[in-house]
Amino acid sequence: MAKQEDLFKNVVSHAKEYGFIFPSSEVYDGLSAVYDYAQNGVELKKNIREYWWKSMVQMNDNIVGLDAAILMHPTTWKASGHVDAFNDPLIDNKDSKKRYRADVLVEDFAEKIHQKAQKEIDKAKARFGDAFNEQEFITTNARVVEYLAKEKEIRERLGRSLGAGDLEDVKALIEELEIADPETGSRNWTDVKQFNLMFGTKLGASAENAMDLYLRPETAQGIFVNFLNVQKSGRMKVPFGIAQTGKAFRNEIVARQFIFRMREFEQMEMQFFVRPGEEMQWYEHWKTTRLNWHLSLGLGKENYRFHDHEKLAHYANAAADIEFNFPFGFKELEGIHSRTDFDLKAHEQYSGRKLQYFDPELNENYVPYVVETSVGLDRMFLAVFATSLQEETLEDGSTRTVLKLPAVLAPTKATVLPLVKKDGLPEVAKKIIEDLKWDFNVAYDEKDAVGRRYRRADALGTPFCITVDHQTLEDQTVTIRHRDTMKQDRVAIADLKAIIENEVSMKNWLMKM
Ligand code: GAP
Image 1: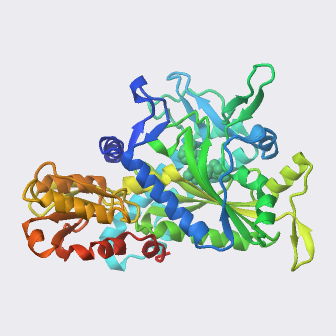
Image 2: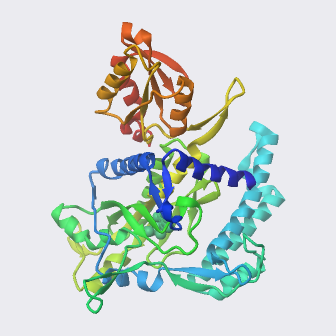
Image 3: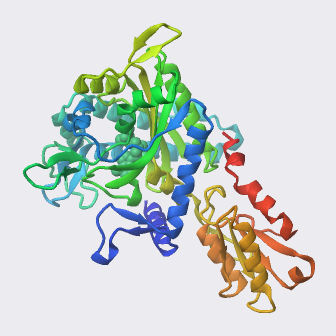
């Protein structure tokens, strides 16, 4: 655990030191669970967004984009169920006065049991090597069977009690499992209470006439209320999708773990409108497609798993999370939800307008069913950043810190370095930059010894360093150093564009899906 905590602290400090993420309004000591993306962070975030947009919108001729406003008519949130049901179950510790999400306390407990089972599995795997049959071990090893059964029982009971709104049973579960305040160890708990997560604001010049609004807690509703506008103006045929990226706001009470749980964050959501009755096949399709998108980034198959929901949200008939192995364990990265016709029907009811589709093949009108994919951009950032940050021991015994970002997402694709700050080398380096910057984000670095400049580029996740030396003046060649292997090749300046393009082009990465 201590090791995991150290790793996580490292992630946070590296993000700050190298200009990826700063605490918001830090000169005033920051604002809890709100962060600013700095010069390198904004590029990485933009690249992740673009990687998602390309795969969802550009590569699917039946999915189009949208950028709906953050402020929406307040009835939207009544219809969507957020006014009445967008709550978190909270519990206070009477001794420490700390507040926690009751469901998270239980889930973390269940995850610890899962980790114990995983430890036994890993030990056996190391002992038996190639002869190890994981499936057989999981079903026959008494200890593992017991751990996994206990985990399942806890998760199912939590799902049942939350689904039934039985907060007394959630508290009973916390007490039965003897869950203690993670910070103080106290087990002196209050009852569990519900707390609405929406941020309120006002529209209007004078206090008397002001209209109460909410900052949107999800981008999805902007898509639902525009469903018919897009369908008609784009002459879209079911099945079709509408995709959107944008800010969402939640008054998270227990906002910890850096950018994992923020009060202002960005979502990348897609609502896919289908014929009633066909939603389950599309739900499975999108589960597979979205997992493949994640896997295409090469962060390791073992870092992902599905978690099918026991407790379904008020709008869903099936739901699963793609969980990622963050530095603090497996947690939700993306949600895939079969939302039925709940949202469109609710907006029909509250607005008095029809939100139906005429299906020419069936010759009938219906309210489409919806399958949603929803991934947090900031969580994607954290998954990519934390997994890429590595300490390596080199052959000579020295160490290096390297951010092995997927090259397609790296903020800067290449740093160009003159070997020395004289003899015309800086001029040649700058000329190379002038040529490459039409296609890529490139940087110039002439300060310090070349070795230190390489290390700096490694820590920023820059896939290539291009060094201009005296030979360059004679034959128009440079050395190109690869971040991950540290291998150096001598190549012609004229070939640089193609070499970089080959490694960083979205096409090449997305084709791995
Ligand atoms: N429209 C469906 C929806 O909003 P959700 O599971 O509440 O579903 C979707 O959120 C995704 O948004 C999550 O999987 C997560 O990646 C991200 N997300 C949710 N709350 C967040 C928060 N407070 N901070 C950062 N990301 C968050």
